[in-house]
Length: 90
Image 1: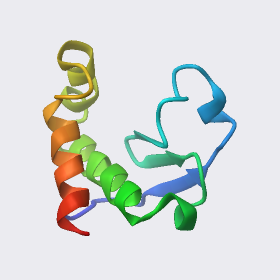
Image 2: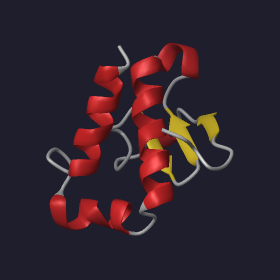
Image 3: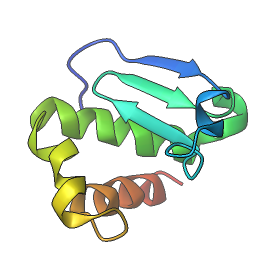
Image 4: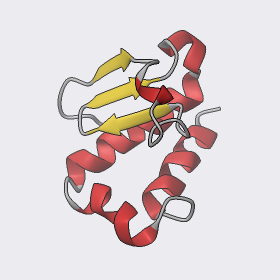
């Protein structure tokens, strides 16, 4: 996997207290990864998972985020791929 630009990782615990975000530990918006905890505490699996989403959005900038509207979360192929990437790097 090759990322084509700088990726920023920010720890924003207050964001994950909001109703929409409270179910997540990390959230990716194109080249920005937002984490509930600092990267060291969040763990390598979560960082890998979110970086996979960055890569996905670089290659499918509209299809990837819009897929959650019509495919949902649990069985979304982008989520499945990100989970598999984290599993493969353990």
